[in-house]
Length: 538
Image 1 (tube, rainbow, N blue to C red):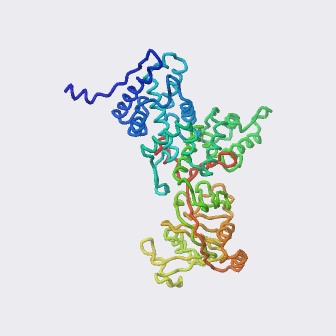
Image 2 (cartoon, rainbow, N blue to C red):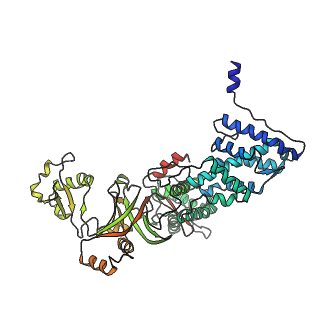
Image 3 (tube, one colour):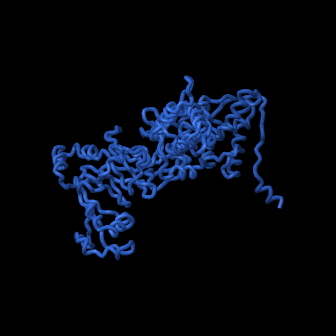
């Protein structure tokens, strides 16, 4: 029994091993590194600071190449690359990562001991600890900067999701020998313009707000002097209102401060302290930090390079961009699916668009919305310019249908909306293959683009700048000259235009973006941030 207990007893690390001469460190540190590698393997890959290692196998492989010698220090002096690594660890939040995941607490304590305690510089256990923590921090950060920390999903375009032990060891060896720890880590981050703009904007936002503190407000607004004063105090705390000139209780001054806050946080600027405005005011800096981190992680799920020309629809941002050779050539407001009828996230290729399209009404809309309306009033069909298509593809008379007998369990027809002013698809429909039967299209309700909240559709994406998009898609196609396109549109011609080279299209979910150095935040309309936050344990 004693033997069994001894075999399964957790390995205990020695606290310190002080050498008499600094030069002896090179002989003693390797023994301590071996001891710690064995400890990590015995401790289910958890290191001595209770932070999990990336992989004990990766650490073992790396130190086999160095004969267990330290790589971050020499003769009791930290290498310059250790300073670079430490800088990246304590600034990990700028890349949407947590410093604590990279041993920031233990390394901070070790650095302090090295600076302040002369004996610490002769402690072989301390140098071994620092070496392993730095090595694991580099490997883990390189992995996280490239692949992210969130789970892969069904639309992730990356084929790879992990670095091998060999590759990590080679990266670190090369970075140390060439003194390029910083550039090597930077090279792991997405080089996409959207990611770089977000990171730059986040650094600016962090510099402005990270040291600020503000009070929380009661969630229910009351039109009282006391509540207005709480609002004023909150706006002063975050720099959105200046009361140094007096008149702090002035209603117009309060509205001005609310509008300034709403503008910065991408909200409808009505100057009113509504529910959403108060909820946003009650968010902490840590909340914004997590929101940005989630969106940086989403960029890491994209491949290293995107096609020369592609369309990106940011669903919660209500925005579509056509990017060509790294430049945004067409941008447009969009209307997306309501929370109950979400626009799906997807990857596809746009192949054609149709002028003056029919609208084949989806079954769900037919049953839930149109059938009850038709059963109440047969004139609904004419008002909405709808025709009934039977199972043979023929249009039939509404009078031939026994509407009272139809239900979700029996509806052997398709409703089709004819082209015209009332058509829900508007003048143009853009097609791309997908299992959800969604597409981009114009709309006959163009006034809705003025809304700040535009999660209103049944799932398809309505595009305000449909004209600019169609013209750009055919700008180099001699089969469809611009003059001909204009004439067909003016005449109301029903035409399908095949795109000469199909264009990749991506529907993505970014609730934080960077524009002109400013952080632009969007509402989490589908609750995807909440789900990802739990998955990433943030």
